[in-house]
Amino acid sequence: MCGIVGYAGGKEAAPVLLKGLEKLEYRGYDSAGIAVLNDGKIEIAKAAGKLQVLRDLTHEGQTVAGLVGIGHTRWATHGEPSDVNSHPHISKSGRFAVVHNGIIENYQQLKAMLQKKGFTFLSQTDTEVIAHLVEFFYQGDMLDTMIRLTNELEGSYALGIISADEDGKFYAMRKDSPLVVGLGEGENLVASDVPSLLAHTQEVYYLNDREVVVLSADKVEIFDTNRERLEVTATHIDWDVTAAEKGGYEHFMFKEIMEQPQSLQKTISPRLQDGRIVLDDFHITADMLRNVSKIYIVACGSSYHVGVVGKYILEQSTRIPVEVDIASEFRYRDPIIDERTLMIVISQSGETADTIAAMREGKKQGARVLAIVNVLGSTIAREADDVLYTWAGPEIAVATTKAYSTQLIVVDLLALKFAELLGRMDEAELAEYYRALQALPQQLEQTLADKEKIQYWASQLYNKHSIFFIGRNLDYAVALEGSLKLKEISYIHSEAYAGGELKHGTISLIEDGTLVFTLATYQPLVEKIRSNAEEVRARGAYLVSVAVEGDEQMQEVSDVVFTVPRTLPLLQPSLTVIPLQLFAYYVASQKGCSIDQPKNLAKSVTVE
Ligand code: M6R
Image 1 (cartoon, rainbow, N blue to C red):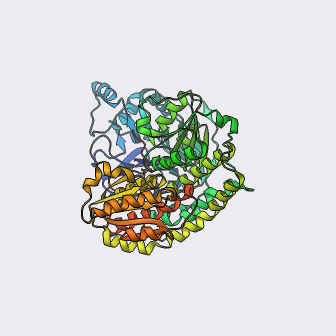
Image 2 (image 1 turned 90 degrees about the vertical axis):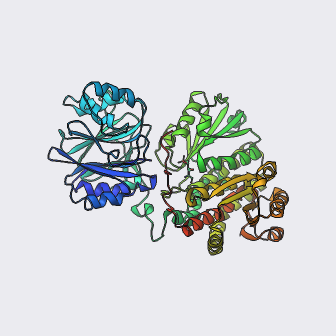
Image 3 (image 1 turned 45 degrees about the horizontal axis):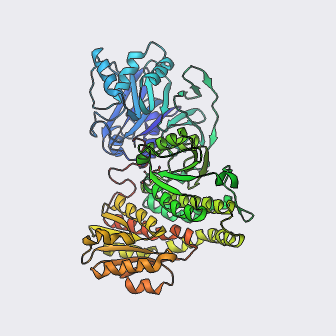
């Protein structure tokens, strides 16, 4: 979704803004623009298309002079992607420029009011009302104007605003849309995400809803809506600039796939201490857990798929009923929640609008909310009662891989901890799991080493128009993810089915040469899925299977087999998913698709 960068410092703002926007490209966008303040004048450059269009238009920012500016990448919501709909938007007099991420829900009422007052609109966006509204409210005090905006705007917003009357500074604020302040030396910034700040500083402040920040080269001031000045407490970000760079890889997605052994290690190591699982600051006792009558897992997309794994393993290890819900459904389905409900929300970004709304609903109704999140200081991380970070580092490719894998691990750790607390696993069983967890990064390394084989088969099979993924139990949960991975980056139609369900309708689509991926790694049901594989093969399917090493029988029924090392059943998804990630990647690469930024998709879905 949209990305915002703002800069005030000793450098020319335009090139800094372009660099910052480049780091937000991963979020998905269709146009870009900058506004720079220079000697009481605002200059704007914006254009539909990729950032390169804006780079060319401004000669890499050289033609737009000034030391303070705001920049934006737009993912169209109101109005098509076009030059005029691109941000920044300018007020009637040209004295205020605005960039915005989010949706202003009452923009039509505001627009009608402003039109009556003589303001005319050039674009179809909701954002343009903000530019005119600023001008309408402004009576010589920008802080007042910003506070007034918080009273008038309904919906979600992260805003960057410059005023021609206030040289050397810019303003920003947020509500339900991410915005981080970068605290530099002789320069200060805001951005939608940390990677845009890393070239300047690793000290950040996570802005809270309705806080107004005023930034100049040497000062950052934050105010609440009563004009009270707030303390600026810095958080140190433990990433360096290279963490968010490709480092010689052709795509971020491939880099992130290959980083998974290290990411898993970082997620596991601090939580296995002296043969015990320690879940950071999440303190839950056996009594508290015994009082939990139901667990809801709520998330979107791949995080939801981790939730499906979670349902299977948490129910198995706790015998507490677990429901897993898509956040956009959960929030409107009037779920039955009370103080005995434990709600687990899973989100890489911590900023997914539907997941945030579902979490707030759960909290309102009395649930205790545990969040599994990757991005430090994100909205979900801050609002949940407890947080377990996944420590995957910055994930830039839209298609998640390492964040998914680390989420899986956190869910595993949770299930094991709960089993330990409830006495549902004995010491020996738990010790076996700890050993298996410790071995997992190395096994993942081993699985990745098979990538050439998967690349070869991707080159043979990339021209299929429709692909099915089947599996049972945990393999079904992984099938959902394998299918989504393929769809989102290769644009091949694909569906995931529980192995036993196919014959209730979908098997009618199987014909000669239909590609079916059979996941046969969940040992307790391997015989069952083998029968399902036979059923589709008998109808002409071309069968690619994922099986554990040494499974001779799967070799016999399949055309191609990708093997993964064997681990304990609850942990197996961490290995089973790897060939599917690689297959999706190589197919997309073979087809020449835009792998890191697939069409129509955004990394962080901050609108409903
Ligand atoms: O940041 P979140 O984990 O809340 O994002 C949820 C989904 O938007 C995300 O997992 C999406 O499905 C990915 N693009 C899948 O690769």
